[in-house]
Structures are given as structure tokens and as C-alpha cells.
Image 1 (cartoon, rainbow, N blue to C red):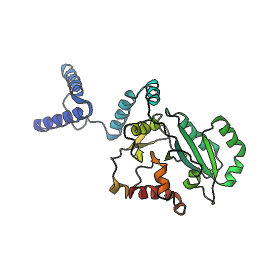
Image 2: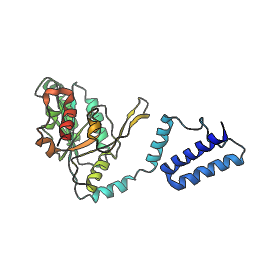
Image 3: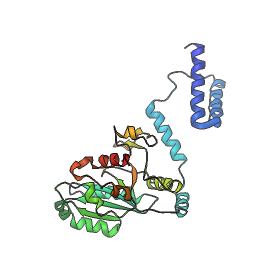
Image 4: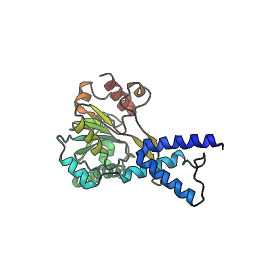
Length: 267
């Protein structure tokens, strides 16, 4: 590699470190490079020294985890909230499988922000098959609410009928939330009480627990929303506005959530 190209790569990398970590990061990286030079090791930036996109994401996750607030600090922040809205988390269950309900409950029970309720819609047949199991779950977790579907397929509209929250959220049975997810969204509402919709980034989790395929979302983008429902997982929608636009369109089946957000877009 030519000297000019090496210099260009070094300057480009310096700008990236400055943007990510500030001037302190630049000096820290310079110290690392100096140490390599003293030991006689390769220290110049080349095309092979840059981590893959996947590895860069793992590094980013590690940094975020290291900067996460301690639970006691989160609890103190929640105690200082001027409003603590109830969040109704809507989901559907189309099979007699209490393991899946328990998994959703587990991810919600781990939330630092505790003012939530889980509203599950299921068919009368499934509800009948799970009568004893559901009674046991509700006895141990009163925030679990169950509603029978009107039709043969349970829908978010069915779950919404028993929702009493100020905000609605959607979860699929296999979704998992970071413990601070609800706290971060409700915290944003403390800073800006007016928004009717707040949402988070998301990624995927492999069978062995590795996080991958991050989706870092933009600020409110009505145009992007026309091509993908990027706000549904995971976001909060103000219940009052949902009611004002007529609620869910049950005839759209699994497309109900996307249709609802698109109609919110026009408001």
C-alpha cells in the first residue's frame, strides 16, 4: 500500500474514532499505536485491520452495556417521573402453548418500568384448553389479562378491548425486550410529553444468544413508513389517538398494526 493511501486511511480512521469516542478516544488509539511501534509490531492502518461489520456491532453492544445505568439509578429516575403512564402490551396466542405466554411475561417482568399490563387474545378453544394454566399464571401475575377472540383467529383488536393503558405496544410471542426498554421510552415522554408515538431500535437474537442484524431507526420519517413498519417493534402509541382514528381494522388480519400506524401517519 502506498504511503499516500496509508495516510488517507489513517486520517479517515481518526475521524471515525473522533466521531465515536471524541478527542479522548483519538489519544487512546494513538497510545495503542505508539505501543505497537515501540514493540516493533504493525501499527499502520491497513485494509485488514478493520473489524468486520458484525464484529463492530459486538463492540458497540459491549460499549453500550458498559455505559448502562445501574438499576438503582434507573429506579431513582422513575421515582422522579412527573407521569407514569400505564402501557398495555398487546399480543395474540394462536395455540395452546403456555410456554410462549410465560416467555413474554418473563421479558416484561424484567422491565425496570413496572406500569404495564399484558393483554393476550386467544380463541375460545385455546382459552378453554388452557383454563387451569392461565388461572395459575394470573394468580402469580395480576398484570396478565386474557380475552377471547370474536373470530376464528385472535387479533390485536381482540387484545385491545381489554387494554386500559394510556399507551399501546405490540409484542410477538417470540420477542424479547432489553430490561430498560420501557424505561427508555417512558423516559422520553418525560422530556417531551406531547408525542403520540415513540419507538426504539431493534435487532435479532440467534439461537445461541448472539445479537445481530441491527436496525437503527431514523427520526420520524413518514416516507420511509410507506415501505416498512419500522415503528411497531418496539414502540408506544397513545391510546387516545388510536381510538380517535377508529382503532384496528380487523379485516386486515396480521396487517392490522401496519394499517394502524399508516393511518396515524396521516394525522
